[in-house]
Length: 370
Image 1 (cartoon, helix red, strand yellow):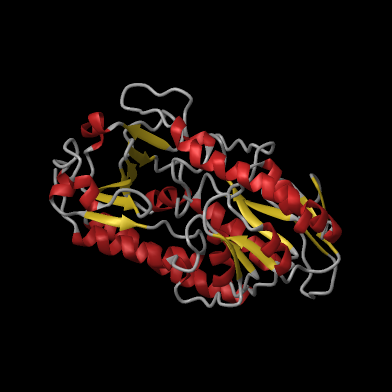
Image 2 (cartoon, helix red, strand yellow):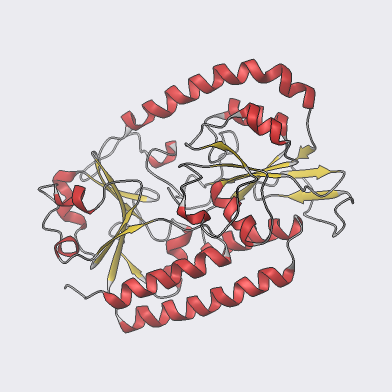
């Protein structure tokens, strides 16, 4: 996700084990496009260094301090993010640039970003439906590709992105790039434009939502706005729990492409962890294996055909593609037509309320197949 909340197999190195056995497939070739894009980006970024250096740092950062904010926009502002990095400015940031997943959370709390970069085309991303982003500069529509010059022109005070743990113990790789950045060189160029804060996207879904809200409050979101969104969230959560009790089906959340099938491990993805805590049963064949994904070649697809419902990520193979795979066409959920395109929602109260309503409807309309 977040592939669209959070990750596709090609998004991060940690999603691709160096060596895979049994039902797992090699993913090394998935790096080629990103590497080529990163190389081209580094070349263009080097040309921008003199111009960006003139702007200097919009603030300073360190690895100590505590989170604090003042309600007055012109007061000194300090915030410690989930990596332990503290950003200190002489005023509360008002011009925010953000990766799309976290931009949606800011918008839901009444904060309008001045620049947005995404993993897919931002203008056509349905998760922005209902929000006016016409005044925001769209500075990236593909993972790791950010137009540094256009971003600098937007003059952000702060850049918001995420960071994913590299394992289920919650280890953060602070030497590598944050999520959405091509590499550490690009991240360094971004830091010349504005200081960067990261939201940790791992562990419990509620913790990620809380972190997003903490940042939103520090940026000026009202407690009333957050509380109103939480009421809708709580209502949707209760209904999802009721739906899961009414119809005890197994849900398989997956991504598929030419290499094979990638089944999300529910306790490693914050969104599915949240839904699991509310009673939804997800496919979880190997909870102690590789982090985040159970990976199956098409030849071994039968090993994961236990779900009553398939939620297939919108960025990968869809129903017609799956039916065309001889080793997968007999999947019970696929044969029964219980397959749904699934776009992971941002981890904020408003987005998750709508997503839980959608999942509750899917559960209630599905049949248990075994």
